[in-house]
Each structure stands twice: as structure tokens, then as C-alpha cells.
Amino acid sequence: MVNSDLECRKSKRYDIEIPIQEAKVSKKNIFLTVLAVLAMATPALAVDVAFHGDLNNRFNLYTNQSQLYRTAGSLEDKALASNATPVEKDANSAVWGDIKYRLWTEASSNDGAVKGVYAIELGAIRFGQNYAKGGGGTYSGDGVNIETRWAYTDIQLPFVQSKARVLIGLQPWNVNSFVWNETVMGVQFKGDAGPVGYTLGWARGHENYPTTTSQNAFQDADALLARADLKPAEGTKLGLFALWQRQDAFDGTGAITNEIKSFGNNEYGIYTLGVDGGFTTPTGPGNFFVNWDAIYQGGTIDQPGDLDVSAYLVHADVGVNVGAARFTYTGWYASGDDNDLDGDINNFMSTDVDRFDSIVLFEGGYTDDNYVTEAPYLGTVGLILNKIAADVKATEKTAFGGAVLYLMTAEDVTLASGAKGNVIGTEIDAYISHKLYPNVEVAVNAGYLFSDEVVDAVAVGGDADDIFRSTMRVRYSF
Image 1: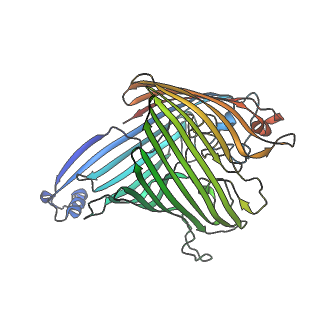
Image 2: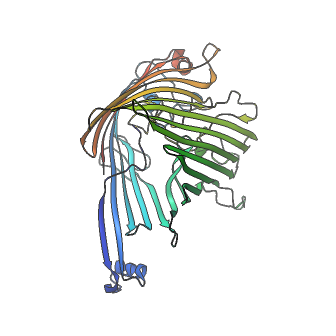
């Protein structure tokens, strides 16, 4: 059920042998001229080219609360309540289809020392909808609506026997699935030191170029990352990371949001320290496993507000594989802020992540560009999640599963009566997936949230309907 930017794909590979010594530079042939310059004294150049695709056709089969999924994060701020339309009764259902297509090419030297990656993405384009960025899915085709997804060069340092690779450009930036797990411009160095793998990185999320009124050369939104991954024992993996994010560009227009990527022109310095990992071991019934995350955030937001940051998130998965079935308990606590006026920020803040743990609230629906929140919390009030899931691989082609979730905010919200409450509700999810071909999947899922007091607090009339959502996808991957 989890989508990944770097899923393993089958690929078409082409070995291209280019005899440079026979190429004659011609004013009429720029291509051969470029090849000759690149080759220099090398007699021949071997290139491996791999072409990949992820063609995802998605359908919102039905929801009775269309305003929740009108756009990405429609009702994320402040425990479901923001500027968007709150939960309503009646006349709020919707059905739609969309496409999200991603194509990418990897060109590498035959020894793997150098690799270039370029990816484009189309979507999410709804059937019949026009888009301000230049067309979409309406009559007469689309306009300009393709974005660059990845564009980076990956180079192994010469004369180094162990892994020592430098990645430069628009690339995956994987700090932690609760902190930052997306694409950004930057430079990373990935290496091995004996049994320890490590990553050192610099990313720039926003450029604030110096002007006549602002001469600060380092006012940009920069991030520095250090991460170490090791296996201290058989079946155990352990990760340690430290992330420093800062910006010095306050211009009076910045606003503090619940994700650092959307902070705008604020002055801040925030550090995030964490440990994550997993453990698995054989048992009588099957393999027992545990996954964990423990994360602390500190620092300051100098403008606006001169605020001190102190927040945390803890998470664990505990489960067992029994034959073709997997049973998992998932729980986490993302801290919230109980006082907006005390000069502190105590709510945990992701930078840019995608969580799929709930079909109703998160990106668990297959139309996953439409969700209540992509982060592991709701606004500034945090989140407490408890989930029990069962997944069964019935055959080589067919899998199904279900889950029960109990959801609460970490801090109370004010109810319509003026009292305080923190129960969002109980959610039931289910899915079935079938492979028509080895690389073509058809899947359907559904989620039903029995709405409780937090949803009632933002509902029209103060009494929310239960929330239902069912989605489908036909996905061709190669």
C-alpha cells in the first residue's frame, strides 16, 4: 500500500558502444562534435541506458465528504479546521478520475562509476479539469503541465575502493519517514566506513538572492544532514541522524505553518535529532519484527515571534509474519501545542513527507494527491495513532488486507459546547490488489471513519457525518 519514489522497476537496458576514434568533427554534425570532446583521448565510450515508467491511473470511486479531498491538505490546519469548507452534511459527495505518470531515464557508465538520472512527472491531472499551470484534462488535450521530478548526477569518487558517491542536483532526500522524505535540490555524499554507512548532505529548499536592501549572502533556507546506518547484530539495523535547518530572510510577510517547507520568509534555526531502526528474528509462528523511531526537535524561530521550539515524536511497529499473513500493531505520538501564546512551539513539525497509514486522513487513498494531511499529525495539536493491521498474500497475484485505527489529537481542541476533547474517531480500512500482469496492478481500497468529538467540533451544525472514502488504481510499472 505504500508508494515510493524509488520503487524497483524492470527496465529496458541498452549498451551503446561509440567508436570515438572514427568520429570526424563536422560543422554540420554538432552531435558528433560533442561526443568527440567528451571522449578526449578515450578510444571508446560504453553507456548503459535504463528507461523506467510508473503510469498510475486513479479513481475516487466515492466519498461523502468531497471538501476534505478538494485539494492536497484541504483541512489540515488546526485539527481539520482551516480556511477550507468544514465537514458538511448531504450534497457533499464526489466521484472523479485522474492520472499521474512518471517517466525517468538512468544513463550510467558500464562500470557504474557515473550515473545521470532525469525524471518527468505528469499529474495529478483530473479528468475534465483545466489547470492554471497550462491546461490539463479538458477538451483538446493538455497544455504545459509536466514537472521535473529528479535531475541529478551520481559519481563514485575515483581511487576509492569502498562506496564513496557524490550526488548533485534535484534528488531524493531521505532523512526519516516522519521528518523529511521527498525530493529537493542539494548535494549528498554517501559512503561506507567498515560496517557503517553514512550520508552527509546539504540541501537548499528556498533561494533568497541578495538584493540592494538585503545583502546577507546566507539568508536562504538551507539544511545540513548527517546520518549513520549500521547493523550492530544479526537481524538488527540502527540509524542515527542529525538535521539542522535555518533561514535568515524575514521580510515581514512570513507565516509559521505546520510544515517547515511552507514557512515562507521567516528567520529560524531548528535542529532535529533522531534514532530509528528495526529488529527481526525467527519464532515458532514466523518472523517477529519491530520498527522504531524516536525524534526530538529544538531550536528557535526568531521572526516572527521569537519562539522556542521543543517537540518530539515516538513511533513503533510490532508484528509477526505467519505463513502468507502479516499482523502488525502501529502506534505513534506526535506532540502538540496546548498554548499558542506562551512563546513556545511544542508541536512536532515535518518538513516534507508522505504518510499512508490512514485512507481517510492520510495518503492511503490511491488518489493520494488529495488528502487531509500528508504529515503524521493534524495542525498544531499533534496526533496519537493506534492501528492494528492484517495483510495476506493469497496468491502470487492477489493480496488483501484490513486495519482498525483509533485516532486522537495529542492536545485537546475546543468543542462546540466550549468543553475540551481529543477523540477524532475509529477508522476501518480494507483493500484488495491483483496483478493482471507482472507489472500491471489493479487495486481497490476503502476507509470509513466513525467521526467523534474533534470532527464534530468543525462540522456544520456541530454534528459530523461519518466519513467514507473509496479509491481505485490501475498501475503499469516498468
